[in-house]
Amino acid sequence: MEEDDNSDLIIPVCGVIIGGSLNIRKCWVRPSLMSRNKYSTCQRLSDLKEDDVVLYKPNSFKTFLSLTSTDFEYLLNIVGHKIAKQDTNYRKAVSPVERLSITLKYLSSGNSFSSLCDVFKVSPQLISSIIPEVCDALVEGLSDYVKIPRSQEGWREIADEYLKRWQIPNCLGSMDGKHIKLQCPPKSGSDYILFIYLSLYFPKKKYIKLNI
View 1 (cartoon, helix red, strand yellow):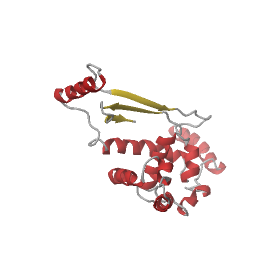
View 2 (cartoon, rainbow, N blue to C red; view 1 turned 180 degrees about the vertical axis):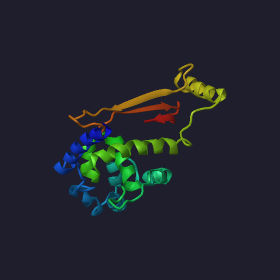
View 3 (cartoon, one colour; view 1 turned 60 degrees about the vertical axis):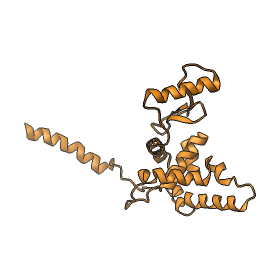
View 4 (tube, one colour; view 1 turned 30 degrees about the horizontal axis):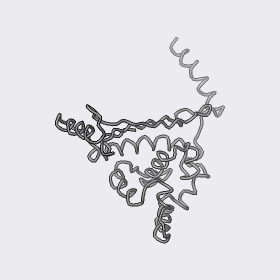
């Protein structure tokens, strides 16, 4: 009886194999994205920095990523080793410079993943995983620079500053937030994500806490 059951299973499995229903991946990187190696994000950022050196009012780099090249290098030194990936036999990994650039461009513009794909030559599917990873690395890497008080005295100093500067009693921070809402196309799956920024400020307009 057991042999008959096994025979019944073998027949449909053979039919699937013979019929060619098993999908075989034809390529790991689509041809339209292969040009990333010809003019990479690293080369583009280098050109923008050269523009800033030549131009009287340097603003090319900041226009592209909404921060200066110095600030970009500073962030890259903090999170670069956290977001680096290994190359494989099938494709070259997206570099830390490209990963940070994609994330900063998204956070500053709110562009769709498809639009970012056109700019950086990285697939929307990969971008959807890059951005959360880099955001987590930024939050972790900047935790030593953006801190909340750990004692009653620390919170009391903030409350006193609010009372002195803005005449607001018993205030421990100013919270602000921003939603980046993307309308999901049909059958887009997890490629489109809603990001929420929450930030808490000191009375002197300094960050206490930032979360993405």
